[in-house]
Amino acid sequence: MIISLRLVAAIVLAATMTAPGLAAASPSDPLNSRGVVVDGREPPKVRAESWVVADADTGDVLAAKGAHERLRPASTLKTLTAVTLLPRLNLEDRYRVQWEDAHTVGSAVGIVPGSRYTIDELFYGMLLPSGNDAAQALASAAGSKRKTVRAMNRRAVALGALDTTAVNPTGLDAKGQFSSAFDLAIFAREGLTDKDFRRYVSTVSTSFPAQEPKRDKRRDSYMIYNQNPLLLDGYRGILGVKTGYTTLAGRTFVGAVERGGRTLIVTLMGLVDPTDTSAERLLKWGFDHGDDVSPVGSLDAVSTTAEPTHVVTSAPKPQTAGVSAPLDDGSSALRRSIWVALAVGLIGGGWWLQRRRT
Image 1 (cartoon, rainbow, N blue to C red):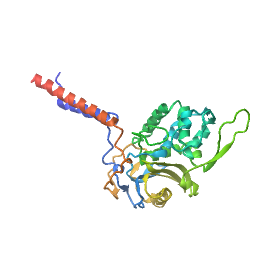
Image 2: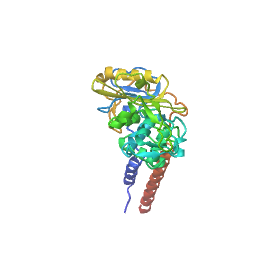
Image 3: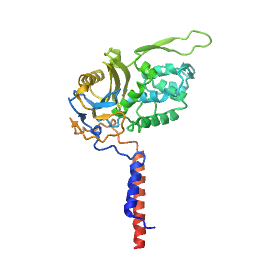
Image 4: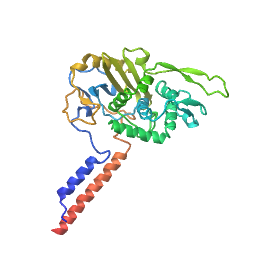
């Protein structure tokens, strides 16, 4: 059988296009720009590595900057932890905290090894004071940290959040752990469809149980507070969602506001200006001018074929060390090398067979 070089090339091209991790976003997708993208009135200047303003109801992206830049998410990744674990756990179940849960590094709600907490209480502990200990306890309650991270990554892919790679359930800086402003908007939008998620992220404060007492003594409690500045300030229509901060990520933020029957989501990563000021400026623009702009993308679509609209600032800024990221932690490069080697082997083999028959 004569092997056609054209056939071999076609097979290789098809294989590489469908290989995991190799499908590049459409170059004509305006959201691939590192600059501000909008089709209509320009949004206000905001100093952040990336951001997105989107309509939660329609999924329309009204404006964005570096929407698909893969950056460190800090604790905003807990939105993915929540949308992954809420359907898997019974809120009334009680979980006995292990030593490794309580001693997770970073921000903590203060769970105590050996004490039992309801899953409901642990979600409050994770989403209000951003307790990494509570996040780890929820992951353990769901089977293990490893199983939870695997489930988070599957959930991200299922939602079309293809910029995200989770390494832990807390959002702590870790090698290979990244997300994007686009993906964070997807997680927030998905979370807002769950009444329990909405309850947690909109709660300003609640009491949290202290160490479980011995025998039949009354269990003490203490107050825990949300860290969302818009929620604490009583910003009109605020639904909450999540803040984040680490040394490498800087400040990150996901917020949702409902006004006049419309819900807008704003996500910001690598913030330089104050969180509340930046979010409020973009939200005000969205509510004031959202009807006057055409969508530049959709949270429902992995990629679009629309031509770029109006790129306000197309020149990319230099990446800050430790903040921006390559496409992944090396697995895509490995896969790409394997497919290239296969391509070379197939084409070379086809050429050799053809040469023998001529």
